[in-house]
Length: 153
Image 1: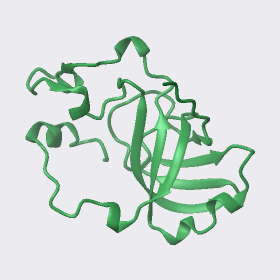
Image 2: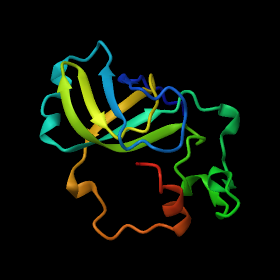
Image 3: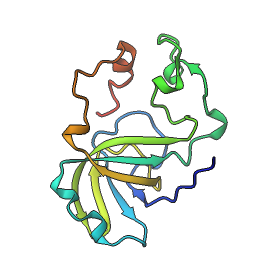
Image 4: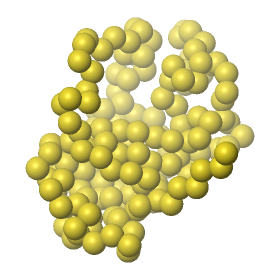
């Protein structure tokens, strides 16, 4: 089966290079493609957060990992499978982040905390509803907490 997806827009921000940390203060604009008008974003600012699904178009396809490896190459952390990590070198190069909505202007959505570099293709935008968040405590291994220590600073 082949799936074809057309980006709905792209990211505009100050981050030009792929980097793993310090995304918390990054402000981005998601500029919708010309097939969308401001109507596509109507009502979105009634929510505090949105889920952004994007494509790691600049990730090195030769680095795709189908098995396990040490996160960020750190041998102090255990080898874990690709589906136990959020790295960009994934089978389909899809990224997903929950961002804070700052506002809209026409067909542009302004957000904070999007960990996608400038010109990254956006595949979808969804409002965050409390009912879709976990209904129980979220747990994770200690290495993941260490890995994320500077991610949102």
